[in-house]
Structure formats: structure tokens, C-alpha cells
Length: 289
Length: 258
Image (cartoon, rainbow over all chains, first blue to last red; front, top):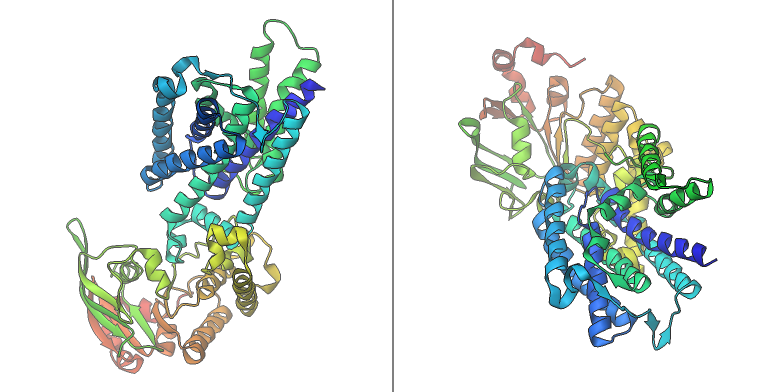
């Protein structure tokens, strides 16, 4: 039971990250390489005020929102003016800067040793116990994020995002301020990753810089590609498949010293087959080029 | 009082002078055509007006606003619609979404998209009704939920026209709208352009190779050769200059495009 709760909690947090990636990459077409690092900004800033100031979940989450939105705004100011490939490179660079801050600003982040002893989440004086109660809390917040995302993209704002993704020149000639819209969606997406970061911090109760390095961003990309971008179902199914797939391998009796390698290989094969035969993912409406 | 004034426009890329001292004025509620051989700079004039290109010299004024110092989206918000030579529809979106992308609503703002107060909702509903009517009028009413990439070329062109109209422009820049259309569709398009001008008070500038269309519909025609305006006049006057057009453009130009 505890094992299942653990898996579902992780799926929840990944869903939130994938939904935010869908907003930024699926709808707006921005290949952001800074995703995990922004999640880290949220996680670290919340953990810092929880540990040093003893704040509860809500004010810490608000601090995380503010800090991440600020960093995302600065990132967007530098990167949204760049063309596709340069945008990827630009966000990669910013991600590197953020990671090295995690590693070196020891007064706040405790460097590579990481922050530990992060308290469990508490809401208005009530402690949310680890395990099933925390899972329910995560499900509720994830549902909220998915609802916010759906409301954004089902409005003309969502059409404008996709128009810009498809042809930014035509979108501009139709009166859409391309840079502004991109900045706005990037910051909204970053705020969602911040919330995921806070949940992750309270779940792991330990943070170090390697929690937010580039493989994590790539994992979220993979979750989005597998589940399918531009939609809601895909952002839940993708993370579920990526989390449950290795676990399923464990149950079919794979064990021994090579199991991790076999898992990685199967995982790679799954992604390649998917790209070949269903580039839009299982539930996607748009294949990310 | 002209609604659009193009004053001594210069445009060069490096050493290549694309436009040289191009000036013309467009009266409101008229159809003006720019004609000329390939490479004469007709599309470049459109690109400068819609501010996709920054002119190296000269000014563009629209109804009291100077356009050449604005961004492309600001120009569009002044009420200028632009149709490209290729339909350039948003292939991944539905027909309806394509047309809706031309509208500029409060709900384009994420906050209003989230909160959706009554005023936002009403404006949005009205826009949807209007867009459905536009699509219906252009024969796309039955295909609202189809992906735009599934449309035929002619339908895509009509869709890009619908997308322009959804923005309720006051001035429309149409770049070769009849290319790739059959005779019947061309007739339909001409009729609609005429109706937009006569009933809705829209002003149209047309870049067109089909001289039948140009002479049939235009109030005024400017002949552009190698980046310069070499002749201007009413359709009748330009018809008198048929010899000159032939000299510049060859007799192939006078014949309708297939």
C-alpha cells in the first residue's frame, strides 16, 4: 500500500510538471531546457523559508511562486527573442547558471550537501501526514493545476498560443504580440513547476542540486511525448507510463545486477518506437517537431 | 483625405535597392491595385506597411497614425489586415480555431481567460457568432472542426481570408488572392471584395497578376517596375495604357492566369 502511494504521489508531481511543459512546449512551442531548474528554484526557495523561518506550506508556496516567476521572467527576457534552436541553447545556459547557484550559494542551498530536514507539509496549523494524506493533497493540487491549464488553453488565449507556435509571423500580423505572449506563458508555466517543486520538497524532505539537473527536464519531455502534447489526458498518462514502466519490469521477474541497464534499454526502445509510430504520443493532438 | 499615405518609401537590403521613393495615397472605401512584373517590389510594399520590414527611408501613415515606427502586431491593431500569397493557415488548428485566431479579445489575456467575467464571456460569444457567420459565408461552415491542413488549396485561401476578416480590419492588404482559384471561386472572391468596400466601408489594396481582375475591380491602379511607381491612374486610364503595360510586362501578363 505504502509502495503504491509512493508511486502515485510521484506520478502526481510529474503530472504537474508535464502539464506545465505542455503549456510551454505543446501549446507555445518553446523547447525549454530550464524546466527542472525552475522547479528547483521553487523547491529551494520554499525549503529555505520553511527551514529558516519556520513558515507553513501556503506562505512558502507563495514565496516559491514569486521567486520562480521572477527567475522565469528574467529568463524569458533573455530567451524568448531567440529563434527555436537558440532558445533551447539559451534556456540550457540559464539552467546551468541556476544549477551552479544551487551548488555554490552554500548559505542558502547548503551546496552539494543539500538541504535536509524539510518539514512535512502543514496547512493552517494542520499537519499533512506523509503517505495517503499527502497523496490526497497532491492529487487536489494537481487537479487544480490541470483545471487552470484547461481554462487557459480553452480560451482564445490558447488559440493565440498555438497560432504563434504554428507561424509567428502570421500571428504577429494578426495582432498578437509574440514576445509578450511567450513571456506570459513561460512565467505561468514556471509558476506551475514551482508548485511541483514545493510538493517535491515536502515529499522528499531533502533537496540537492542533482534533483534538478538536465536529465530531469528530459524525463519530463519524455513524459509529454509519450502521453501526448496539447491536451490533458496525455499529461497524466505520460508520467504514469514512465513511472510505472520500470516498476512493471520488476514484477515480470527481471532482477539481478543488470536490471537497471535492461530497464534503460527498454525505456529507450519504447521512446524510439513511439517516435516512429505515434509521434503525437498516445493521447496527443500535435506532434512536437 | 486619404486613409493610407505611403511617402517616399525606400527599402534596401545591403546594396540591393528594392523600393525607391515609392509614394501613393489610398482613399477610404476604394480598391487600389499594385501591378508589376515579378520582383518589382509589390509584396515588399505590403511587408513595409504591415511592418514585417523596416523601411530604410520614408513614412507610412494610416488614418493619422504613423505605422513605420510600430511593431507588426501594433500595425494590425490599428485595423490593418494582411493576406499572404500562400494561405499560411495554421495547419495544426481546426478551421474554426484558425478563424478565431484573427480575433483580438479580452479572453486573449490569461487573467480574463481564467476568470471569464460576464463582459469577457459576452465579447467572446459574439466573436464566435461572427466568426461562424464569416466562415459560413465563405463556404466553410460545414468544416468548422476539421483540421485546417485537410482543406483544399482554395479552401485554405478562403480560410486565410476569413482569418483576416475576423479581425474586423479597416484596410485589407491582399497579396495575389486569386492564384490557384478556379473561375467560379475568383468570381465569388471579387463579389465579396466589392461587398466589403461598398457595404462595410473597408479599403482594399490588392497585389494581383490577373489583369482581368485588376481592371474589373480597381478604382485606382499603380504600376510598379523595379521598385519604382512608373504609372498611376484609374482602371480606365490604365486600360488606355495597355501598350505600356505590355511593354513592361509582356502580353502574357494581360491574359488571365490559368
